[in-house]
Length: 295
Image (tube, rainbow, N blue to C red; front, side):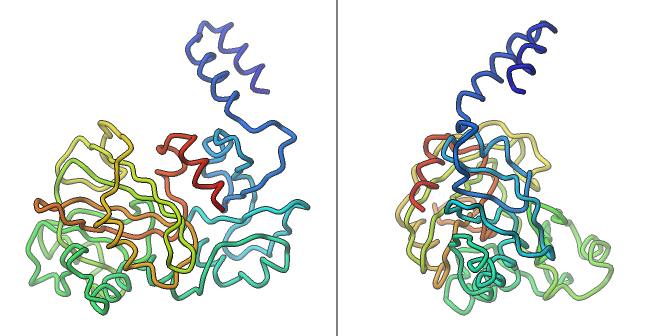
């Protein structure tokens, strides 16, 4: 148990660790509290989720391709915290609702439109929003380097890298065509990056919370860079308006990652149609709890 773990730390002389553990346990929901929100797939952030103290857990062993799980006897929201799971929840929403789950989701193509980085660029071009994304290069031979190269379908920085010439691109892609499986885009430099988590229903933003991060480099690929600091940030209305323009037809929790250009204009790297690491671990617990309670 947590008490035994704290006692073991104390006996080993690790008094600060024992104190932090006891403080963390105080934030947990009581053991008999009903699970009101279940994040999937399981055990990415269960420790952080329990600390919200409002019945949020990340303990369900359900992943893409598994049989539909049964919901608890009490009402419980099923919320994705991985991109592929967000698409699965959208595709399987009828079966999940029949199994007793509460859902905040939308049509699968809306989820994929945001998640897939190539489709996001195409959507932005169609909607006149491309100025709010990094410039996309269709050809490795004609790009201005350095650039950021990303798989169209990826999460948490997997497969992303800074490339300095077309040979770097061909090496990463195996010489294959960039699109639709890769996006080669302008490298936006700067030590400060922002992450905004949004609660959205039918394209209407119900809540928004932003974290500003400072990293120990001007050019980097997260999470392969040391973090210097993080603070809550007051989101400008003009930036929220840009995000809203991308969210037509969307329902769910989502996350925008972006930097600010010299003129203050927002430059969005990606939109994640699921709970992000910022909301799970970096937003202060009372503020994160407030967002979940609005469901």
